[in-house]
Amino acid sequence: MPTCDSILRVCAGLVVCSFVFTTVGCELNTGANLKAAVRFKPSKVGEAAAESETPAETTTEVTVTDGVGTLKGKVEYNGAFTPLPPLYAKGADVKDAAVCAAAEAPNETIIVKDGGLANVFIYLRKAPKITGDAAPAGNLIFDQKNCVFKPHAMIVPVGKEIRVLNSDGVAHNTHTNAKKNTDFNKIVNPHDSVGAPLIYKQAEQEPFSVVCDIHSWMRAYHLPIDHPFATISAEDGTFEIQNLPAGKHEFKVWHEAGGLLEKALVVTIKPGENDPLTIKVSPSQLGK
Image 1 (cartoon, rainbow, N blue to C red):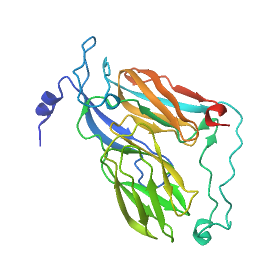
Image 2: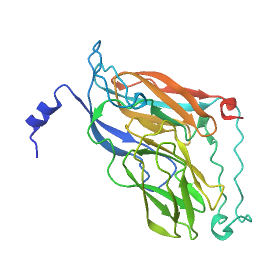
Image 3: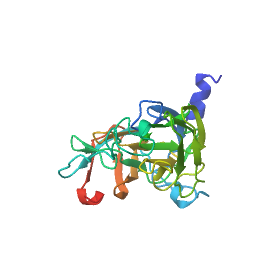
Image 4: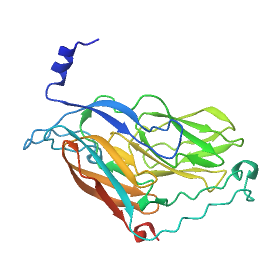
């Protein structure tokens, strides 16, 4: 085991961070509050960064002043909102009704609570130059209950294993619609608590849908990503990204009903706590 002195020598000139991936929508271990230790290599102010062999959309130059900061905020729905009715009611005449219609199927396309918009992906536009393992420990869980995916929205570290479970008493055909990654398209047997392994090997530019080919209404969204600076807004629209290197950053903001809401949202991070960021979304941006 390295001594404190050796660690200090290794860490000289580096900012050592512990980053958090977050997801929402499931009480199981879906990746919420998982920490990963990585090292960020800051560039000196005014110094040109070395050229990278990584494609342009996967790396970025971040000018670091000193320390790291936390970005907190809220995605606000700027208008009146009437909650969407369920996809079908409890007891409805749908396929595999004994299981699927044991409870109503919520319409999670747009969820607004206390003026906040849920399930909005907020993520750094390009991967910063970091070293170390950015993936959190432990497997991620993607389940199916009463013919509804749980969680509805999920951020997944590249190379991290997801266990695709099935808590239902009927089979599901879980099918991803990735652009860069090979599609996962498998039958998951009833009451499968072990799960089928799913690993994304490449980062994607935007989230993509996951569907069940047996039950057409089932839909969720995944975003494989190669850095830890990403989050999904909670039910009330609030969000948080910890341990961002101080400096100027560009974020993407994406929602399933409106697609890419912000292509390059510029945010300047100061060390420590920062003023809350408000992201306003109009009904028209979501097709309302």
